[in-house]
Length: 378
Image (cartoon, rainbow, N blue to C red; front, side):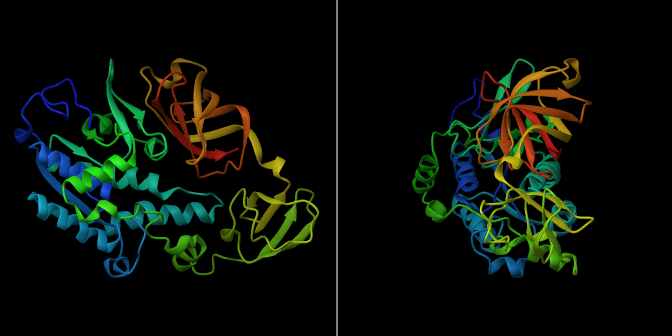
């Protein structure tokens, strides 16, 4: 882990043993290594794990972050390294701020990303406030992203390992939160280094698989979760093309996402068709050829700006924009409408952009994250 130019590695002008740091421990290898490294460096480490949803159900679920077995893994790491560890019950807050928001967005025809909301509303808000209450100097997480000291304060940068970079999921981090947060893994060259550190400290989680699923969505079946929360939400309707021709029927708009090709149940056509729009009010799934998915203009709401000067000081900003977590940033122009609304003009059209997803801004000349917003239309 890269050292800061200040007295200790976390940037504080005092010894590590006088520096209290709360580590957000999910039970996975990343946050466990963060805790182990900081404890080894002599910091006053306090580990906190959040119980975010039903503990009984969580115990039986594999492959998701924050699952019940992960709580035990985090506790074992703390016991091995001899620092205090607490489990906090955030079920109600998580349900209201993340799960309910996810369901409402999906019912409105959007494609939400609950992991971003969890970081924004639970980990970097509620948990961060708890860390402050514990008189911690900072809070550290296992996210792969870098925090660098700039001329005007802390800056957010992509991880050194772009394959592991999680900046897309952390765009809504505010300057005040960024001042308090630390991301010790962001400077590592690869995940292999993280696992090697876990082995060095003798952690049982050294070879633990990465979490893949959204924690409250078993087997990736979003529609089943929505149906459980809102019985009767999956109402049948028509599948039509862009000319209003009926091509088939569906069992609920919630079973479809923008850009979907498979599972439409309208075979026998000469050309592959994709979901290009969802009309919730009329219970319509609109399909069309792939070229209809391409767009160059993206409308954003809830914009979070992390630049050195206020967003509205310029009528346009040259940026690189990332519209999907799995795609690289591409050249674009950001046109602010207000401090929280903007339009992003993509230089080259991209496909499958959907309301509810995030659009993240990057400095075209560096790895710096300039913020982002939620896609409201495209």
